[in-house]
Amino acid sequence: MQRKTLQNSFSISGKGIHSGKNCSVTILPHKSRKGIIFERTDLKANHQVCASLDFVQTDSQRQTILQSQDVRIQTPEHLLASLFAFGITDAKIQIDSEEVPILDGSAKTFWREINIVGTEILHERIEPLEITQRYEIRESGSSIKVSPSDSFSAKISSNFREIGFLEETYTLEDFPQISQARTFCYLSEVELLLKAGLIQGGSLDSAFVIVDSAPTDFLKSQFPKFNFEQDFSRIKIISSEGNNFRIPKEPLAHKFLDLVGDFSLLQIPILAKVEAVSPSHRLNHKILKEIFSNEFQRIQKLRA
Image (cartoon, rainbow, N blue to C red; front, side, top):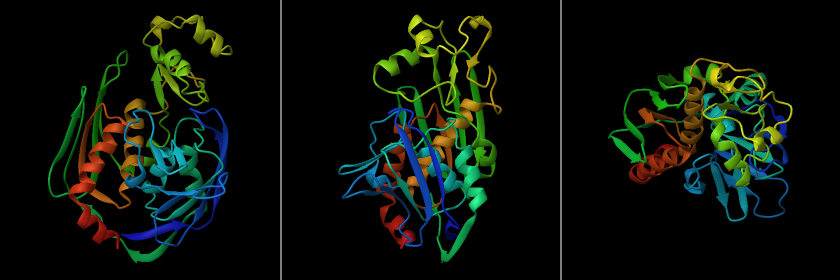
């Protein structure tokens, strides 16, 4: 494998799903061989943070957060997953706010734009990290296991309440389809999240909602354009696109999308078999930090 960057830059604007603020990102070629670097253009000093495990906040279930002193980046995982799936090791990401735009809740726009601008090989080999032992973490009904393999794959399973139990194995070759998978939550969670100051920029255009309860009057007031008079006993999901998934097993596919974005924070390709049951960002980060701690010397040597 060889290091890669972009051939040209591209820009995307939208709202941050949690802050609700308008934000723009520009992804540029970068040949410094220092990895993926975020640069906050709205800050005057100390405005850079690397997309690395060193700067991950591990206490977040619902998003990835990078922080270095006053520089904070929220929800970069869909963008990072797209770069990683293309094999891009080096890029500069200029952003004028602390949150990457959620767009339609998927990575398809990032994937499309990278495909349009193309990639450039930097003519420097990069060796993948071969996992040589098994790692496993369990937490509150969730688990993640990483085992030796000669390729990267992830078997993901979860019980999605009204939808039921889903299981699938994915590889990076599946990413063109996986990139379409939208973020989601349960209908019973929406009011709590909004009142907690989260998903302030969320809408039925940027996510789908799994119906596990009847809509409250509060939700009807928050989403006045949506028809809440439907027979919800016969509907499993709601979104502005209708009551069906974009792709098969969409919530499971989005779990893989998030996992790829998190695994990119190792800053090196990895050969491993991942088995995850109801994974979260926090669980992903915990096992990655364990791998990084145990494999530190090898990772540093491979990065050099």
